[in-house]
Image (cartoon, rainbow, N blue to C red; front, side):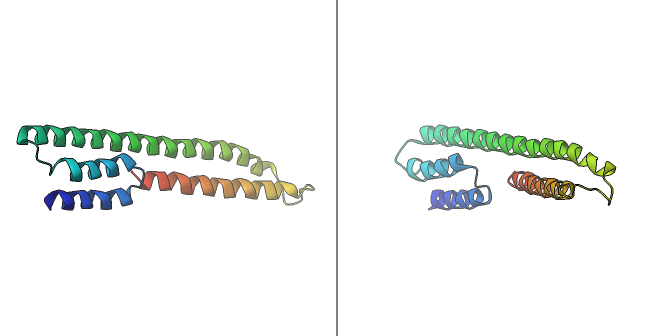
Length: 123
């Protein structure tokens, strides 16, 4: 029962961090392999190996999420450079589509900011 409870709590943690599919698989492997009739030394070695693999997978996923957030930051910086043209536009601009294009840039910055924030929240 103890292995099932620890496996169940890991599944709960995985729902909070949905990118750790390997951790969910490792939890299921623990439930099946560790209660099996293997000797203590072998069981401890297996438990340690599963724990190390789980940690490595979580770190790999955290690095991926951090890289994704950085990509969104770079995208926002690029979009901001396009928005610098807003400083030269006046209210008497004859081409009114300029304002629509600038509005789209602001919306895209918002979407990138939300996606970057979501990636960081998963860490």
